[in-house]
Image (cartoon, rainbow, N blue to C red; front, side, top):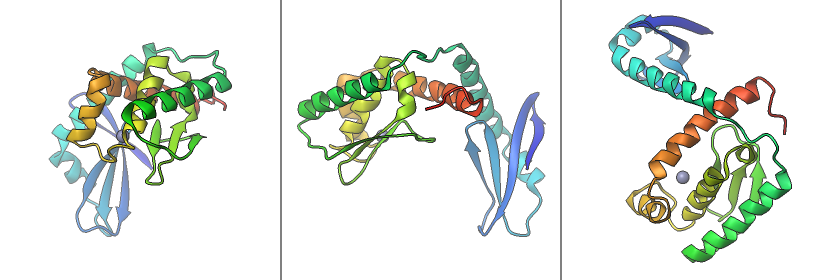
Length: 193
Ligand SMILES: [Zn+2]
């Protein structure tokens, strides 16, 4: 059940879940706080009070991004075949540039990320990406192909990324803003694919 509270004039939605855990912990799920409590522990107000600053910072940050998301436009006249061909062309180009092989490319409807790369060298691309501007699609494709060189988000990985996209932090932030937009549109039933 979603409950509401206020921290320094900021409305915060949260959910309390009791689970078999040792200590209580907080998670943020897009724009909601989830409080995970050990079984038979019910003093969640105390957890909130002890983490007010953390909660306030997280929620106010996401609310600011949501305002930015409202101003973003989604690509509405997209043709999925054109999108897929564009992605495939970029995969060929980037894998050639980075000197890596890939196995297969899958286009999937994903609810938590824009793309992924498996240990079997398969690349998964989120179909919702087709509603985003091309420069972000290009970045996501490069990011996933770069995972064929380095699987984890370590120093080496970000170095490869920054060679082609020195502004990658900005692009990652833009992707998060677009994610909030796409999520809202999916919830409203505007994006049927
Ligand atoms: Zn990654």
